[in-house]
Length: 447
Image (tube, rainbow, N blue to C red; front, side, top):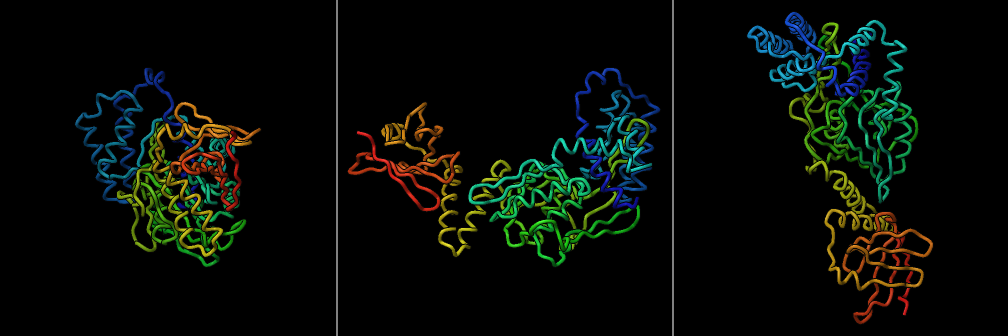
């Protein structure tokens, strides 16, 4: 396999490996020991791997010298656990390189699988194992839905390879094809395949090819460019505003997706500055027990001529990641409301804007006032329970009433409906149902 093809397969494989790592190894740890000879072998082999393949040769040499020096000074002598040794080596390597893609892992079973994959990447057992793990997480497509105001939402947890995840990606994008704006949530996305970035981004552009990114690979001294695809299954959405949610956990390929769209001015980023990993690579076998993830390439953005390594991708709207979704949702609705020339559309957008603002800044109403609204209003009933109002229509479920003002309420479960208290000369005489299409209906209070 060429550098690029091999890396794509290993990017997917390393995600599977990481999913399998971090299990409870406490019982095995009591039995596992690493001796001096193996420590020397691991350190020497890591040095050779890094100096021959790591993206920056000078940094590779410094990393190699750093851990070799620590070994010679006996600074690893007290470590007997192979897992702790792997963690310590990875930490020491990152102290020099600041490269968060570098990982050292103790896992003899995975080493065996990696060796098999190096001999034959089409090994049926390896592919089946990868697919089983990927299917469990739906290839990273955690959630696809339509938020209030017809805002599309995609919660994407990884960029899986398109060879196996392509159909899922196409299904998700076709589901979102009728949204007025789109939010792509990468707050829990740790990276993956550039091909998936290429496929998803292609839905955001017309037929003209857009240069997304370039990767330089040190082992082959070659570059690979990624451009949008002229055709994708289903309908493209080139005129739909895109918002990307980020956090400190957003990493690697998820950062590339964010960085590409930000510099192309095709998306608004909302959240936190990302992790800062722009050096793709893959696992390399150290010995029978250990492997290392080695960054062999680097991203080169066609606009900035650089990348996000070590600094991350800074959002356009900086908010704590917990607030990113509602902030992006509100921004999308406000933009749509400001730009539309259709009065009906504007009314609907403004309706949902009011609801979101109430969620972000809850309205407080005196409990005595709330309690005064109790009673039956024809087929409608308002009750007061545990300091909150509840609304129920005959034959239908009971819903909590969320105040938008002292006498206007919305409902989480039925976002197209609101209830207004009608007063006359300070006396409550009825309620009015308000609907997002502009219609109303009134029920007078029972005497």
